[in-house]
Length: 76
Length: 240
Image (cartoon, rainbow over all chains, first blue to last red; front, side, top):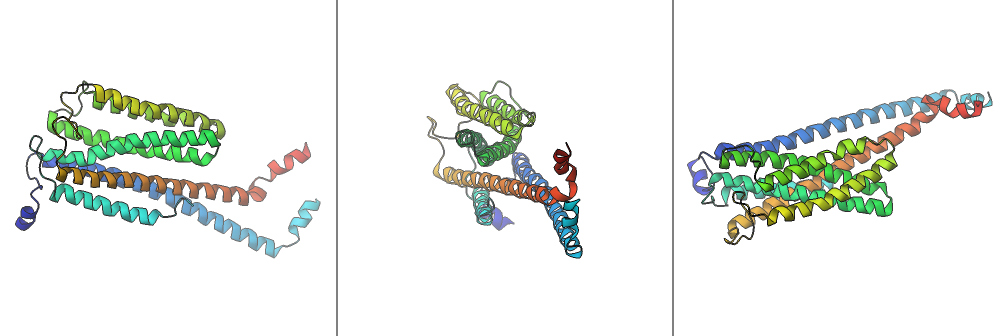
């Protein structure tokens, strides 16, 4: 610790230290909040994609199971 | 493909910020007058410059949108402004912390630099309700672009006006009559500024990528849902 302080004369330990720490923590907090919000958005996109993939698969399977259904419904 | 090069950008941003912060705390000397609290400026000033330039960049993208009619530029403009507003919040918070440490008050109303930044910030805070009050996407994009250009032109004018006033208390970082920053501080500042500016670019790209992905998912949903979930809308015209 002493070696670190000797190598880093710019390190504080004065009265202003808490304000400097506060400013940098606020910046990091804002970044973390932003990343958290973006992570939530990403999760939503992933969920929607999973739903769509499931829907597309189900539709493909349905079409394979009843190939003439679409033609029949269009005739009606 | 908005996400292209995002990984490289992110790595470069983290590296630059790490170097910048290391320089702040292990290299840059403690300033004689302000003492240790001057370290806040290595964060606060780059954030402020980046936010203000970001607002202007948003205006430039808005010009590109109005000239070309391409909605891509509107998205760029929106995300630039959005990111600059977030940076603006950081500027106001870090500035307040510095003011408290230096002046003993969280906010000083007779300091033009502070108040002018707040005015710019509040001006851009109205961008969101203004934009989303318009439902038609084309009109929304067009009106938002006009707003972005007008407000973007206001930013440098505002900056110059404040610069021309004779401030007694807000410190000037660059090229003052007293000689400006010493080299060790200037190098540290430039690294921090490069890191913060790159962070802005990375986050803008990140946001654009997320918006693009969300848009693609919506397109896919529309394409897949059309025959299954909205048959009435397709059938109705034939019935009538």
